[in-house]
Amino acid sequence: MDLLNGYRASLAEFTDRVAQVRPQQWSSPTPCPEWDVRALVNHLVGEDRWTVPIFAGATVDDVGDRFAGDLLGTDPVAAAADAAREAEAAVTAPGAMDRIVHLSFGDTAASEYAYQLTADHLVHAWDLAVALGVDPQLDPQAVKVVADWFDTEEHAYRGAGAIGPRIDLPDGSDAQDRLLAAFGRDPAWAPD
Picture 1 (cartoon, rainbow, N blue to C red):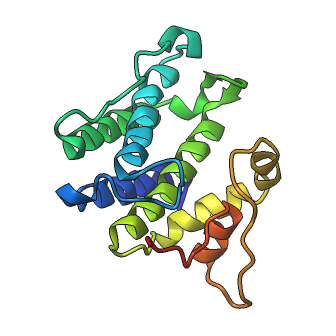
Picture 2 (picture 1 turned 90 degrees about the horizontal axis):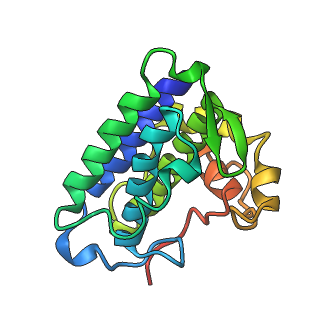
């Protein structure tokens, strides 16, 4: 699976989980201690909203705070689907991977940013699945795309404080659990 197909799969994994949220679950805890389900979904909707202008050449200063606050409104499922659809169009547009994007930490190859987006959607799809008690199995090919990329990025992410400590796993753990552990997730996490 190539990067763009991995990106599409990660978006689908996330939006499919969002569609499974029951009304009483929006305030449920997630593996991200600072976010409940609604805050987690809002985070990814914000990321998807940022993706469109960033891929169009905007800087962080250009975007400003227009995507701050609640982006979910009264229909979080529709907001997530709409944001994902727009982000996918921006990332997969002809020539998009040849661009340079202007991120908070500097100018970056668009393909590198697409890997970051893919990883964030995929890992948070798992976070959302376990928070909701639905199937947490992720697309194995998307897991491979992210794992292959993250193998060289893990140290930098951890050093920047973007992820927690790596979780120790038993021998023979599968690829998904190894990826989650690399991102500081305990594959056995469950809500209290």
